[in-house]
Image (tube, rainbow, N blue to C red; front, side, top):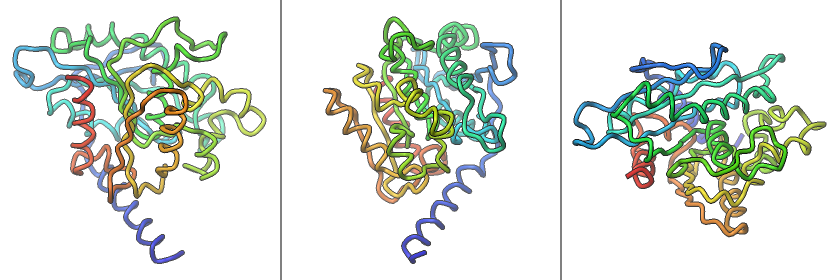
Length: 291
């Protein structure tokens, strides 16, 4: 390992430690969208009066963790509370992760089943949990890492292949998507062995990769017609910038402008770390779409 690689690895460890050092924040309300214990959505209300007399925009935050079972929504709840403190209503959906094999990334089709069901149920659940405190007409979706993949995928369900079980008849009622270091191109991610080749595992291994990829890989679901911004740390060694750059390039070739904000001196985890300046940048990107 070179000195540069050692420095990058040490920085990544420190950033992850900081992001995961915050105590989980209990939600103001939780609602179920199914019968499985993971089929729930946590809701965080903005402070009273933070948006004046207006209901607050709703931000949906989808957590990452390479679609693997040990990584649940708890680690992103401090970021959700941070956004609520900045005047947003926030929803944090959980979904089934992992699989039969230890360390396996995702469950096919359960992970996508859950994300589709959660987003379909969100308007009803948010209205019930938050009432007039949330303005559902100003909804923005954001997600980190594997969660970034999931929000890009969810926003493009209307362009899934004909016959796909998750395809919708029309675009989602969302102002836009802010994807944070998303696993947005499965081929590029595979070439970089992102998260232990998680994308390949998610699709069921080499024998299923090409068959399932058109139903799951955001880079193949362009143009979506949904306003999209990608926020990416230039020093990210977990999901390197090449993945986001490939997605943005593919969008441009498809005739769609995807914003790409590259943050100098930032790795993977500061994007969801309330103690990091990068999280404030993310909040501003969300606000640009929501307000």
